[in-house]
Structure formats: C-alpha cells, structure tokens
Length: 245
Ligand SMILES: O=c1ccn([C@@H]2O[C@@H]3COP(=O)(O)O[C@H]3[C@H]2O)c(=O)[nH]1
Ligand SMILES: [Zn+2]
Ligand SMILES: [Zn+2]
Image 1 (cartoon, protein in one colour):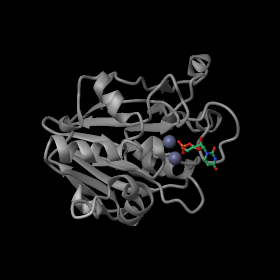
Image 2 (cartoon, protein in one colour):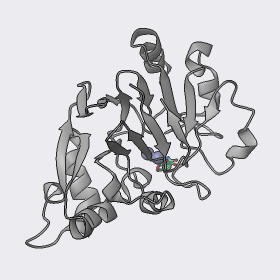
Image 3 (cartoon, helix red, strand yellow):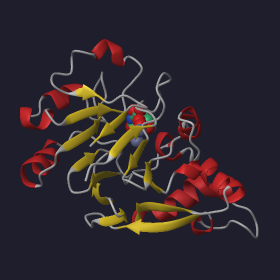
Image 4 (tube, helix red, strand yellow):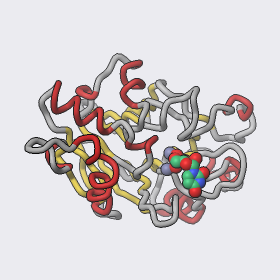
C-alpha cells in the first residue's frame, strides 16, 4: 500500500525561508503528523488545514523545530476541538517532554496537570513495530544526535526510513537497505560545515549508489538553492508537495 507524504516544512532549525522539518503521512483515511515544531501551526494553515485534520502525532526528539508547536496543538484540541490527539512518543521521552517542555505553558490547576490530560499517550519501545493506523506502522530506531539527548529515527511500514536529526550512520543505512529491504530514505542534510550533531551532504555523497538512489534530502538551510545540481543522484524534498511513497 502506498502512503502520501507532504512535508509541512523542510527547513533546518534556523531556516527562515522554509518551515520546520515536519511531515504529514497519510494512508487512505488517516493523517499522521511527524513532529510539530514552532512553525507547524502556520505551515498547516498555509495548506488550509488545522490540527483537527490530524489523527495522531509522532515525535522524534525534543528540540523546538520538532516539538515547539505542541503547546498550541494541545490547547487548540482541548479548547476548540474538544478532543485529545493520540501522541506516539518513545517511552523515555514521556516524562521529559512534559516536565521540561510542555508543563510551563500547559499546566492549569484542576484542569491540566499531566501529559495524559491533553494527549492520549502511546509510549513506544524502540525496536518494536507498532500499528498507528490500518495502513501506517512505525518502529523507532535510536540514532545519535546530541550527547545525552534521546532521539529516534523512524522505520515506517517496514520500508521507509525517516531520519530524526542524527549524525551520519552509514552502517545503519547499509543494514536497512541491504538486510531490511528499505525502499525510501528521507534523510536530514546539513549542507555546509562539519556535521557535529547532524549528517552532512558530503557524508551522504559518500554512500554507495544503491543507497543514494533511494535517498531524499530534507531539514536543509536557506542556502539550499546553491546546492541544486550538487547532490549527485539524491534529490531535495520540497515542502508542501505531495509525494506517493
Ligand atoms: O551542539 C549543538 C547543539 C545544537 N546545535 C544547533 O541547534 C539546533 C537545534 O535544533 P536541530 O537539532 O535541528 O539543529 C541544531 C543545531 O543547528 C548545534 O549546532 N550544536
Ligand atoms: Zn531539527
Ligand atoms: Zn534536533
């Protein structure tokens, strides 16, 4: 079964010409939002959508370009749409996302005192495949990003790899393609400078051709146009465009 992918944004954390790297994944009757950054409410609005058009939220890690829109989402769902959205998130992030990110804005005495008061929380175990809808499954793959910060890339429907922010991991990409029949790789891409906490374009260009041919680049900076034609056989994902995967 094919899935539809529409990126709300394809920008890096500090991009200004592109919205945050957040995605809508759709099967026939279900829309999953992957990450909900600061720009997600406006990016959805630009597509004539609201959070009420989303059936569930899946979070990769706690950085503002991935979770900064969750306070607005939670308030909108509670106050305007009167329902809780299912939230799929690694079990290790359940407590930190409430205590360190959301509690300050969402807490209301007698009304909201936990993550479960505003979301239907589904804690995910890394390495365990979970059905989110009849047509969408996810397995979390822990990947390295910032030392001491848990970050999880996604393996969707046993065939689509969606990188969280991560440092280059060629061994993982090799294993996914050559041993797990991965068909599509949506990978974050830092265009310039040393990777440090991200994967660089130069690193991705060092991958074997059979990996590059299925790799699409996202989470890029505002200078992306200078790199068109310099990505080998890999293509940039365009925000708002609908792709069939
Ligand atoms: O050790 C660090 C920590 C952070 N940063 C920047 O902060 C950003 C946070 O969001 P991001 O993960 O999309 O991208 C990160 C980088 O741009 C960095 O360059 N080095
Ligand atoms: Zn990011
Ligand atoms: Zn990050």
